[in-house]
Length: 268
Image (cartoon, rainbow, N blue to C red; front, side, top):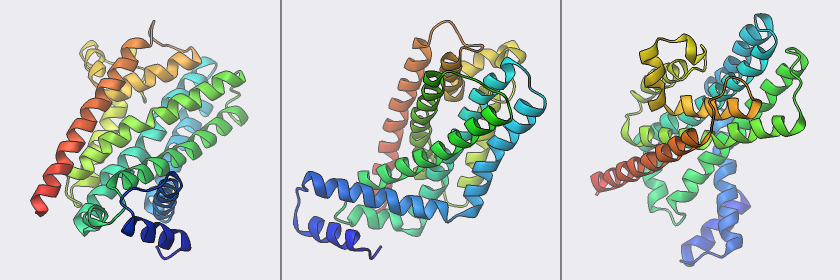
């Protein structure tokens, strides 16, 4: 944190209550860079996050999949792959940083806390992009998937944008869970949500009651939007799923804001 850019931003924010656009961009870039470095220096996070979605796709999409299943599973494991880094980067790392006092230091520093959240969102998106590139490469090279350019780009865009709701979900978890409870709790949420949302097994193969329950899960609506792009086993229209994701984001923002205020009041 002693880089020239950090010193310049710190000096500017310490004496100027209103930052210029250039200073704000420098601050946001610095937060994103620092969080990405911290993230990629954690092998316990990087290796499983990269290996699991690619391994599952190789196993079920390449070795046992055929025809349209390769495309269907590409969308499924794409959703599964990008959800994990978002939930763990926020849910676990924010809980750890809050417990260690790092979040409190961010609150009293001249830089706004929104820059801290922006940095984590950027690092989560960057990690999601790496997973997308890996999955797309495996699908094209080993799975024989051939899609038009606009479909590749559309699926990548949906997967990237779909990362944000789970960042917000993870933020709320990170602000409410203890550092010790966060890893296990996030796993208990992430894995069942992926399964019940139809990311591992096609939703129509689940019991009727679980198919109805899936409508309450953001993972289900996320996957349906991805299926819409590739044109495989999607529902008739995307609007209900878009509205459900938007509502989920609004609820998570409200819950995270409330949890953040409670955390601040507790310290005072």
